[in-house]
Amino acid sequence: MTTNDSVQVSVLGLGAMGNVLAAALVEAGHATTVWNRSAGKADNLVAQGAQAAATAGDAVRASRLVIACLLDHASVHEVLDPLADELVGRTLINVTTTSPEQSREMAAWAADAGVAYLDGGIMAVPAMIGQPGASILYSGSAAVFDQYKPLLDLWGTSTYFGKDAGLASLYDLALLAGMYVMFAGFMHGAAMVAPAGITAGEFAAMAAPWQTAMTGAFQGFAAVIDGGDYTVEGQQSLEFSNLSDLLAASSDQGISTEVVAMVQRLIQRQIDAGHGEEGFARIFESIKQPG
Image (tube, rainbow, N blue to C red; front, side):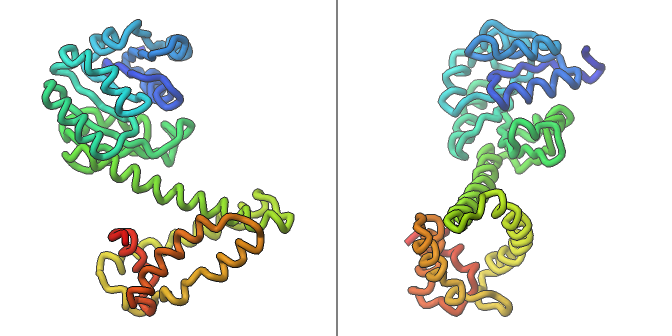
């Protein structure tokens, strides 16, 4: 059922994420048209009140606002390039996962085609959409963000980073980098204790509160990095942070040392450059300026 604030919106791509994005729009009363390359993906949405389009072109023509949630950047072009003329004067919000440069290229394509463009990076898994903790980052057209923010907020907390269409993707991928390295660290620890008969579940019960507590150090590291002085008082030195014992213990347990060795290389590069007495945050320089 539509409401006085209902927006006519079309969603292209009904994978795990696109499906829940569309479902949130339907539930909120927006007149939602959906399209997916393979048949059957729209059935649950149609049962909830969405309209299924036979082609991507039909979906685009049905609405002034088009949401793209496709496999990748190439898929976006594959679907939308033939529809450039149909998109003229419409608004495209692209929440497909892309690199910053791909997002900028898509924004330039949209500008050439006469399409208002907003790029989005989804910081959530499908089950989180519409729930506390879901966050979606946007960059590109401020006018589009302002106009459709109430709709975007149905999915999660909406944050706008500016007119550079690549910024949302940059933040997205940077945050994912931290997540994946954290996950890898947990899995290294679980592998390390496994030969002692400790299950991953038992280890997780110890690791989760510990790693959560350690995130409190982020702001301190950030202050040192932004200040550019790695000699300020109160820091753990690079020499003290040497991970040789951790590497040896991992080897003794018969597991790969790749995850920890990566961090050790960042530390050692700064020690070798004469910065051993400076703070651990200095490994930022190893990452920022690869040797």
